[in-house]
View 1 (tube, rainbow, N blue to C red):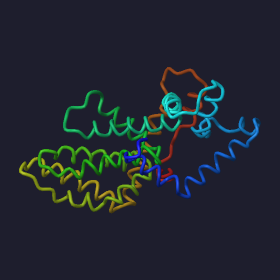
View 2: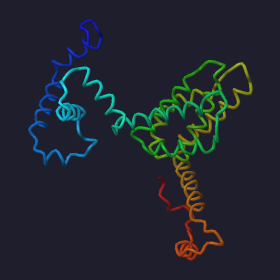
View 3: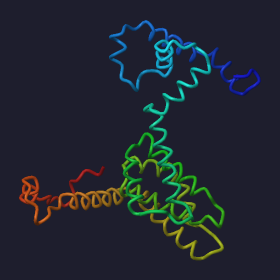
View 4: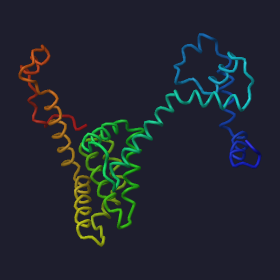
Length: 256
């Protein structure tokens, strides 16, 4: 990097930090490892720096910035962390499409179901989808009222069909939902729709026992549809399901 570039300033600060010192110590320890110890490391746990060093030594290339950048560009494409980032970008794009004012290209019900199911990856996808929801709800221009309405519908689906962690995420932004209960716009129709959707979401959040009961009923209905046996089926597994049907009344079904 050039000395007058912003990245050079960041790297100069980083090179004198404790973090950089720990990084160097870690790389030195990696170099001291035996071949057997290195082979026991999972591929996605191997530092990118070690991968570059190995590639340079095997192919007898110079340790230059140009070579390192070329290797990193090739390696990152198949890196597990890069794939995870790519999936998060795709989830965010899908959430934006489902809450946009423009017509959705595809089956909305199927896309919404897939998005809610992907949110069970709570550490990544769920937070990405909620960042889109709060972004859409924060768009207060009168012409963007559909963004807020669709975001509230997505929020409600996550409350009823998504992971239980979605409830905590919703509670963190409960005041934003409460404000939409008194939504005001020049179009009377938009006022009614946004206020009704906000009131439904807020009612679920303020009455958690009722919310958990509805989640149990939704889960029970889903299980019933899964274990439903075709009449003409001759498999032994379907025979057992037919002889031992799922008869729970959903009272003892786990709320997750």
